[in-house]
Length: 425
Ligand code: HSE
Picture 1 (tube, rainbow, N blue to C red):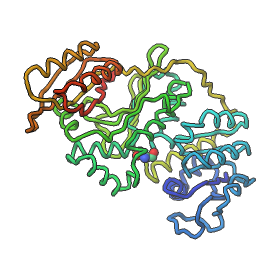
Picture 2 (picture 1 turned 180 degrees about the vertical axis):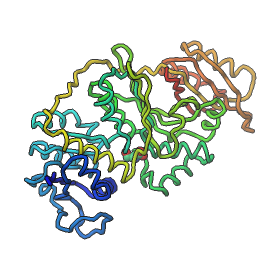
Picture 3 (picture 1 turned 180 degrees about the horizontal axis):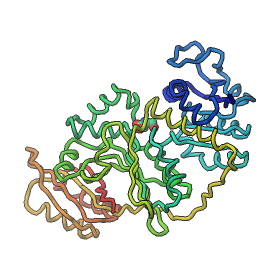
Picture 4 (picture 1 turned 60 degrees about the vertical axis):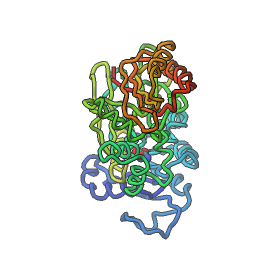
């Protein structure tokens, strides 16, 4: 039987998942491809480390170029993560006319267009399904199955760590720090969770999703981003009372010739499908002009789910490597404009005395922010109370200007939180 030889850069969680799936689904792979997949060379840091994969010692090397320059290897699988040296390795592999599969979101978000061009020039493929949503086959679904649609919007819960933290705060009433510790204990959050909780990981993934959805390169710096570190138990309780769940929502919305992009903790109506996405699970909710609404749901990380996406790309390349490479045009078609015209939830602590609420409401009015509802929550025991405002749709800049003025008032102790209310209109 013919075989296709693979070179793997890295042997961590995802790579070991890949190797194990190739072994336990061997007959499925062979039946599908009519070829065998052979792992020829693997780059590791430490040759002596015990690994839970069934590979001969001889395949391992500590020299990346032994993998990249191996004449027998047709496909390089990059699973070391981070931008450098993965960027140099992938460029070298593509210029060596080898197909590349990667799970590296930071690299694709930053250098994806350039690498796609290098792949095109060398008539090889660059695939990165595992970079967004782990095991969820979202990129290839958009690229292939939804190619008959103009995509109008893409919404995602695409960071499992933050979704786990927010779910635990909602369902088990943990406070933020307790939920982070729990996520670390279970291996979802890193010792330094900042890339997840500050929204960077989700922003990288949104830039990849939105580039594909709208056919235009979206830079991470064009995405308005806010993490979940300021979310308190009180906001979660208030959201629940109002019929919402708080999620870290990545969104890309196209209207006329404009695109709006953000990663922001948001109120999601409890009856919306994205509200049902709990714990470490991810989901992407799309609207196409022909298909309508569609949601893909699954595990956004982990050895086997992410390995499944990587192997799917490898098998695609084996089946379609004869197909001419396509140069995905990435012409600037849309203007990026993040006005964030949304409803907002605003919680503040104020002194409990006559006229305070009226004063705040008139400042909002002065800056064209119309209020949909106001609730006085609890007395805090020090002559202060919590006020919760839900606005009508307003531009974020007007909200910020109004709050700057409100903050200066002697009767306002603190602006506690500002969250988007996403109604998916
Ligand atoms: N850290 C990511 C998450 C998984 O929490 O979803 C890898 O993309």
